[in-house]
Every structure is written in structure tokens, then in C-alpha cells.
Amino acid sequence: MTVTAASSLRHAMTHAGRPGPAQWTNLDGRVTLRTLILIRWIAVIGQLATVATVQLVMGFPLPLGPVLAAIGASVLLNLVAMAQRGGRLRLADRDAALYLGYDMLQLTLLLYLTGGLANPFAILLLAPMTVAAAILSRYSVVLLTGLNLVCLTVLAMWHFPLPWPEPMPSVAPLYAFGIWLSLSVSAGFISGYVFRVAEEARRFANALSASQVALAREQRLSSLGALAAAAAHELGSPLGTIAVVAKELLHDMPPDSPFTEDVALLQSQVMRCREILAELARKPEADGGDPFERLPLTALVEAAGAPHRLGHIQFTVERSDGSVGEEPIVRRSPEIIHGLGNFIQNAHQFAGGRVTVAASWDAKSATVVVMDDGPGYPAHLLSRIGEPYLSARSERSGHMGLGIFIAQTLLEKTGALVAFSNNRSGGARVVVRWDRGVLEPED
Image (cartoon, rainbow, N blue to C red; front, side, top):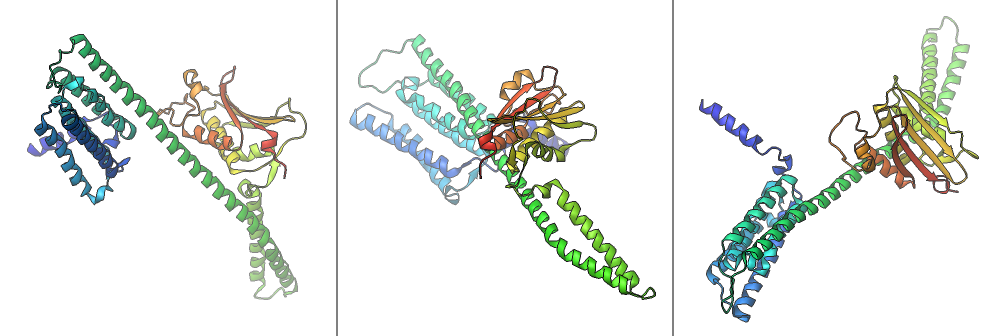
């Protein structure tokens, strides 16, 4: 019974923090201990300088014993923290939150001893929370913001008088409430705003890293394709020589020779090798493996969509009737192949039965439009399509995700403009447009 109760308690403790994120106990923290140690040393130096100025220069009476004890506790904890591998330790989210929580409580104690919210330095209570919002998870930021509001409320209700050489009239209750309210609102606004900005920066950094990985993979595939094409070309000559020699041997060999079957087998295997090399050379990965090889725009679209075709989806690449002039001859770059391929794959994923890619051009620009007959983009998210990690849900109506961001980033790298919309008859529509001078540069 005791074991069962202990097991239940462990399970409850493990899940009690939900919906707290996994980062709460993640050992791969976003901040090093050295950074927080440096911030605390700056705070300690500022606190000592303020105490010395107020007590010695201005002559205001301070409860020096408790004040110096509070500052000394921070000094002691910082020295202990420095002993942990010189501060090079990366803190888990929980440990960093506890570290900043202590700083908030220590500053609250100093303000309690020196006038509470009437102390002009009370605004510094927002500093630890701002640091937390920039580096910690949402769960930790919410907890520390709550702690900050508790500290502000305590200081508004209980505190020692503000150190002053002569008696001061007590602050009007309404004015004191205004100070508390302004600091509380500032705490909520700053924590929310800083966390949102920092989280967006982290998301974009992660998404750009993912796009670089995708581009590197496409470049490796292109290199392998070029190598395969070169190998097929180079091996063709020696295999042709072997085939000629085998044919001559078979022709000159008597019918009853014991080596007739072996030579015939050799000849058949040579033919098989030549077929394999010919097939390898015909594959899109090898045929356009060289990123500097040029091909028509419609052929480029065909190559981008070839790996993503599904048997039950009708896939069509067409030239728009409004095209004017000669078709652009463009480089088969990994960015364009992977970017258009992602959009075509996304269209196949959500299409009801048809995906159409229309290419058009004139003297100034070239455009590729990817359309499907699926549910289209959600209207309330249409203006945000292309942002990384737009939604964690995977409904079929989503048309969202990191893949769209990667595709847009890669195509914009080639000078393209990407726009998202819905067709009037239903389905999603992606328009990719280049200036011909950018897409079709002169050699």
C-alpha cells in the first residue's frame, strides 16, 4: 500500500505542473550560470553604491545591519555559484527561474527595509522579471510574474518608513494605490511583451536553421546527382569496349567451347550495366544535378514536382495563355527546386483530387502559381501564412507549418516574391513571382 501511494505521489508530482512545458526540467538551458552571476554582481555593486551614497553622502538614516545582511547573502550565494565550474554551467529552466526568483525576493527585502514602493528604486523589481521573460519558458515567466505581483502587493501594504532626515507626511492612499497599480501593470506588460519578442526571435532562428538544413540536403542531393551523371558518362566508354570485346569473343568462339556460356553471360551483364547507367542518367536528380545547368521554366516545375506526385491526385503543369515571348531558361538551383517542391507537396497533401501548376512570363517577369482543390487556407490566418510554427495543430484545413516558411525563405533568397490566397472556386493558391533579370541572369 505504501509503495502504491508513493508511486501515485510521484506521478502526481510529475504531472502537477501541467500545462507547464518540458523546458521546466530541460537540462539544455538557454542561459549559462555565468550570465546570471554577472547580472547579480552588477546588482550587488549598485546596491552597495546606493547604500553608501544615501548613508554617508546624503546622511539619511538606514537600518544598515539588515540591509548589509541582505546584500551579503547575495555576495555569498554568488561566490558559491562561481565555484560551480567557474559559472560555465548551463542552467535548466527551473534552476534559472529559482535564481532570478531569489534576486526578486532579495530586492523586495531591501525595499521593505527602505520605504517600500515609496522608494524610487522600487521600479528595479521589474528587472529580474524582464531578464526571465527574455530567456525562460512561458511557464517560468508566468510564475515569476506572479511572484513579482505578490512582492509589489506586500511592499504596498507593509514596509519600514522611507529613510528621510525629517518627518515626511504619509502618502495618500489613492496615490499609493496608483503606484502599486502602475508597477503591477508594467510587470504584466513588460513580461508579456519581452517574452513574445524573445520567443519570436527564437522561433525564427530555429526555422532559419531548419531551412539551412533543408537547403544543405538539397545541395548534397544535387551534388550526388551530378556525380551520378558524370559516372554514367565516364563508365559508358569502358563498358562499350567490354561489350565489343565480348561480342567478338562470342563470334570467334566455336559452338562447342566450354566458355561460350560464360562469355554470353558476360555480354548480358554488360548490357544490364549499360541499361542501369542509362536509367540513372535519365533520373531527374542526376539530369539536373548541376545547379548551374539551365532548363525551361516549365521543365523546372516538372522536376520540382516529380518526387511529390501521388497516384490518386491529378498533377498538371501548364503554360498560361497570357504568356508573352520566349520561355525563361533558368538555373536549376536547389533553392528553387526545394521551395517549389514544398509548395507542390503541400498542395498534394490537402488537395481533393487535382493540383495545377501554371507558369507564365512576359518580358519583365516570370510567375509560377500552385493551386489545389482542397479546403484552402483558413481566412483568419491567411495574413500570417509563412510565419514559422504558426500552429501546432495538424488539421487538414491547416495548410500551415514550418515547411511553408522554409519554402518561402528559400524562394525569397532567389529574389522571388511569394503571396498566399484562396481561389474563388475553393482551394489554396500560392503565387511565386520573379523579375526575369533576377531569375534569368545574363552569363
